[in-house]
Length: 104
Image (cartoon, rainbow, N blue to C red; front, side):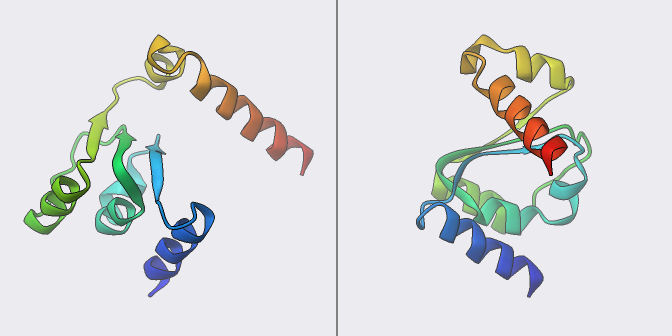
């Protein structure tokens, strides 16, 4: 039930589209709530995780396929943050979140 509330909030925040990118730097969230997190993705969405022990069930794999979504595994957060693939977008998002966190 709690996970369904999070899914509803995700769709409310994104106007029903879902998130394009979900980062799980600890790896713990995706291991325990895989299906709920996958349901929060937008079409062609991407999950990035540090979890190396994750195994998807067939329904989760089917849902990823329906969304044309991906799960990417990350050995080092520095590699992702510094990546030129996103032209520093991730770095600026992380810096903004940290700044807001310190102000509150």
